[in-house]
Every structure is written in structure tokens, then in C-alpha cells.
Length: 591
Image (cartoon, rainbow, N blue to C red; front, side, top):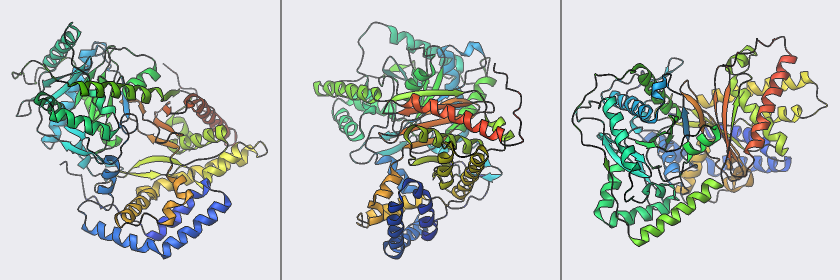
């Protein structure tokens, strides 16, 4: 395990009183006056009755746990998820282009990324990954151990994670078939990039030859988890060849998918990275590098064991390695390895029927998803700083205004906030829909309110967002604490607590706007699926001079919401510029 760069405290357990008070604050914009009165009474009763006992159990759990009061519950929330992990769990990242044209061809781009990922893995294994810091605060580093060799194993009712850190091979998918390729020696020497390139070219050549093709087993990983668990059991109990091939995939360091398409449209790229055709993927693996024929590349990740912040460091360092290693380095090992081997399968008639059913379910799932991309080039982080506006707060407020413009109401909103400044920290939910944000969107859409009053309300909402960030960073969020209390109640057989059954709590937990800010110099786009049938997924990257957003929905209104966000950003900028002394800087020259 990678050691942090200093003392990292345990995740604090908030007081019951503070969490209940903050819960009233964050839920109030969602409720009518009558519902708010009822909710306050329920919270008051909870504080007097069942709440203190649940808190005591949680305190005991915190004292006895080697990790935190939340850690095991949070992993369990991922692994007990029964819907398909495709779209619902796995996000995607579109990586920036390689600066050298020679790396834009498929096999060269793939081999350079494989080399970059392998170098990071070797540094992890040899203890040479430097600690992470955030403004000189050391961060917990345990998530890095979960990047490589990881696989989510489907089981009835509850999946499990396995990690194979002694693996030396990867799986390369091409034409829906997996090939195994050794890239490391036992003493952690990396196969030369030229040799990897030759191996990938060999795989593509084999894949294009007219011959018998094995069934695309990867499509099963897109099934609802219990369905996949039953199919996997059939595979294991059938011919031993199936079990050996599955193990080869599951124990691989990571998967590389060589796709035959050459997408250029950003919506098309996003769809192919988020789900693809399902046949040339294995969604259970923690890392899938996807490289298209035109050299466009990205990653799809199963992130039960780690979050975006952890992956971004891997992406950044792998990109740096690929740039610095051109032309191909001769310092890597040329140890002897077997040629890439195609994995084999033997299917029964029943498995063939399961495959047809899985393909049908996959088509239904992806056909229900709507994706829209906004490449907003009017301004970015630098101009917002000039206006003395937090970029993230400004974006979140624009999301609220855009949603209100369409639906004339506000709904529950989630923003993921990293908490690795604590031992075994993952994320906390930041609630962007504050009372102040709700007040702003109402004033912004009221023509009777002056611009000066609107911008004053905007500034107040931005400040409230900043205060929320500080509280969450201090371990004083609302969602994770209430989630753990509800799990304690369930463990004790007390699922009938009125506060957790009330419509206000159910509305609070029905996330309509699921958002996440996850960008770096190496990431062009970032996206994921909505978490509710009526909701949106909004992944965004804020750059110095532009903003990139991927908007998903199951109700075909992603384009409408994208356009509303664009209008809101321009409206809010104009509002701030017109009512302050700040003058707009010269337009950024778009290359």
C-alpha cells in the first residue's frame, strides 16, 4: 500500500444534532411549507427517540472499525447494486490526443498507453509513487492499490471485488474476442513498446482473418448483476475451458479494447466509451483502455474501489510517460514472451440462448440512453476568477437555473466531493441546491427583479456553495451520515423509522441532477449515466478558457438541458459583468 505524505486523520463522525439541522437546511428547497413543517417534526422526534441510539451504535462501529464508520457500508452500497453496472456505475474518460502524429494510429496509441499504465503499476509495486497532497494537506493513498488487477465478481444478491496484484498479463479485446498478452516479467520488467505494438498488430491481423469466432462473452457483463451471476455459474460448471478463460480475463492487470470504428462526433465518442457495442468490452474489470481505429482513446472504469481523483493521477502520469517515451525507448526489457493467445470457449445451447437474451437487453438499455455534449468556449476558469467567481459554484448555479427554466421547479441535486484527506476517505455528497441557490433561480427568472438584486442573490448563492464545500471537506456533510444511520437501523431490524420513510426523505434521496467535476489536462470529456429514470447525469471538465460537459438522460431531453445550461452560463456572466466594475478581458483566441 502506498503511504501518505504525513499524518492523515480518521474520518470524523458528525454529531446527530448538527446533521439533523443541516438536513433541514438542504431538504427545505424541495418541500412545500406543509411538508417542511411535517419534516421538522419528524426530525425533532428522531432526535428524541431512535436517533440517539442509532448514533451510539455508529459511534461503537467507528471505535471498532480499522477503517472508518462509513467504509464497509460504502463499499457494500456499490456491491449490492443489482442493476447493470454498464452506464449506471462505470463512468468514462476521453483522453487528450497524443501531441505526436505518429502516435495517432491505433496500435501505436494503444501500445503507448499500455506502457504508460504498466510503468505506473511498476512504480506502485516498488513503492515509488509519491504521496498526494491537496494544498499541502496529505491525502490517503489506499485507493491506488485498487486500480490494477481488479475485477467485480457477480454473485446473487451481492457482488465481491477481487484484486490480482501479481498478474503480469493484460487482456486485449478485438472483434469481440479476448486475447491474453504478457507485458511484464516476474521481476517487473516491462515488455518494450515496439514488441507490444507488434503484438497488437498481430492480434488485429488474427481478428480480421476469416475463421470460426467464439461468442462475445463480454456482453454478459452488461446484464443485471443477478442474471450475470447465474450465467457465470453456468460457465464455471460447464467445460473447464470456460473457467480457465474467465480466470485469465479476471486476473489481468487491465483490459485494452481495440475498436474497429473511427468516431469523430463527440456524442458518438461518448456513447462508445460509455457502453460501446457491449461485445468488445468486459465491464467488470476496473480499467478498460479503449482505442479506436483513428487513435482516439479513452477509459471505462468500474470504480467500486476507487474514485475519479485517483484515476486522474494515473491518466496524467501515463500521458506524461507516452509523451516522454517518443521515440520508443530501448531501455525496456525484450524478455521472451509467448505470442498473444486467443481465449477459447465452449457454449451449450442454453448459454447460446442466454447470449441472445443478453444482447437484446443490452440493446434496450443503450437505446434508452440519450447523450449530449456541450463544448462551451465562451469562457472558462480564468475569466470566472477575473469576475471573482468560483468556477465550480458558478457551474452548479447554472445547472440549477437551467433546470428551473425547463421544469419551473427545483429537484434533488448531487455533486461528488473528494474526502481523501481522511483515512479511507472516498467522497461526500455536496448539495448544490441550497436555499440561497433556490432563491437565486427564482429571482433570475422574475422580470420584475432588478439586475442588481439578481447579481446580489447570485453572489450570496456562490458564497453558500463555498461554505458547503468547506463543511464537506471537514467531514460534516449530511448524506453519508444519514446513509450510515439508516444502515444501522436496517441492521437492527428497524427499517420502519418514520423519518426515513417520509416522502421528504425519499425525495431527498431521489437524485435528479447527478453531477461531478472531474477534469485534468489529460481529460477532454468525462461522463456517466443518470442515477434515476427522470434525472440527468452531468459530468464536466472546467478548463482555463473553456468548459466541457457530457449530459445524459433516459427521457430524451439532454439536448434541451444542454441548451438551457449554455444560455444560463451566458446570462449569468452578463449579469455579473453589467452590475460590477469588472470589465471583460479580451476574448480568448480560439485555435
